[in-house]
Image (cartoon, rainbow, N blue to C red):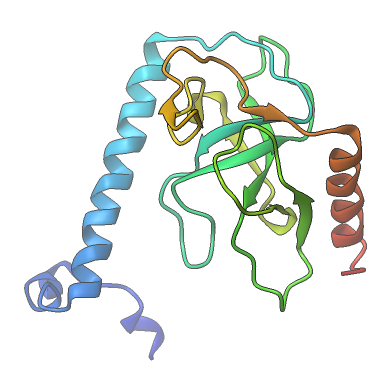
Length: 179
């Protein structure tokens, strides 16, 4: 593919909608724009003022991203305390699906309160800073007794000290090219 073919020209839009994959990407782009606009409108009139603690696990909307970047709603562990004034937090996404050819997935085992029968892994190579507006304070994918937690606010769970140390050790190995 030539460099100039990477970018879609507006005049090419009619012909590209016949390709189902491109059509799906267009709708994803529109959804991404809509979500970002909703966040901006919300943040223009609201100040998020709550404390988040290191090791807590929240549901995060990672939005629409590019290629193999993590997309949509995932659990993530908070890497540092965030006081009420801070608007951003640094997180490491969690997943149950890993690719064994990479050493960036740190096994955490089974996490209490997370709705899955599979082990959870910290995707340390996908560390991100996210605005607090992306946090679901009322988790949706999290359930208790197979019922949505509509009355639950705050973190879904919290990592144990041992699990959090695994994440930090993995990050140190990643940053020192030891994976």
